[in-house]
Amino acid sequence: MLHWTGADSRTLLSPTYTKALFAPGRPLDANRYYMIFPDNVGHGQSSRPSDGLKARFPNYDYDDIVDLQHKLVTETLGIQYLHAILGMSMGGMNAWQWAEAYPDTVDGVMPVVSLPITVSGRNLLWRRMVIDEIRSDPDWKNGNYTQTPRGWIDGYRVLRMMIDSAPALQHEIPDNVAADKFLATTRVQAGHVDPNDILYSLKSSFSYDPEPGISGIKAKLFALNFSDDEFNPDSLHILDRDVPKLQHGRYVVQQGTPSSPGHLTMTRHDLWAQHVSEFMQWLGDMPSKVGSSDSRLIVNPSSSRCDPCGWAATTASESR
Image (cartoon, rainbow, N blue to C red; front, side, top):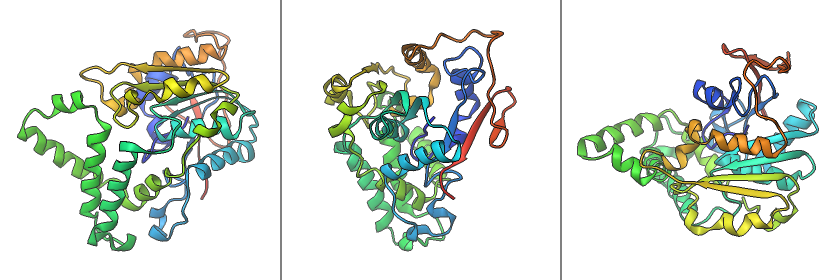
């Protein structure tokens, strides 16, 4: 399970994700599957700029992230072959890369809200705008800031405008009072994210470009996007063009609704869990049966942690 930019494994272990995907009878019933939730380099408990190096932290890119994920699985956990990879946003981009870089190590991959093309168009512009806002702010002080730079707060607001769908924002912000509330909330939210961490994470995407090699992907690949995602516009018809190049490819563009939050629909797992079921059944898995007597819980006692719902998962940092 691969998280998105600015998140970590704990995000994917939230009660809402558990209920929609991992609980008994759900598509990734944790009584049946042993799951790995890595913190990507630059995030969570993996090494990141905010640990102390700040702007002196070594540069990394998405290839490095995937290579470290592979080392974590094969060298640290000793697992040479994966049944499936599910990734969202940055994690979805990493899923495309996994399938291409390690074609003989996984049965299937499911990239969600991502495209197999170089970061370009609006997706590139908003990243550049956020990076420039941070770096041009005098309070950034070459990464040695003592308070959250205003440039990051403004940059985060650009991100929120891009990441939410237009209908969702229209509903949420009908007037100036609602706009004031939105802007106040985003200021608080931005304060919980380290600007150096997000700067490194954003610029790490600039070398991403799996498109030239996707015809070499051997795994079954099920791409899921949302029609109201402003980061990966369906109007570009990228999946129409590229999925037919795959040896075993399928894709779904789920239609947005007035209440679906665009790119952030990835956090509304209840809205797309059925497609995870379709993906797992395509891999040959039978649907889970709640209370089935032959279900089994696989636990790595040295590295797993159990949640109150009674299931276990491995969480790990890539490099420390």
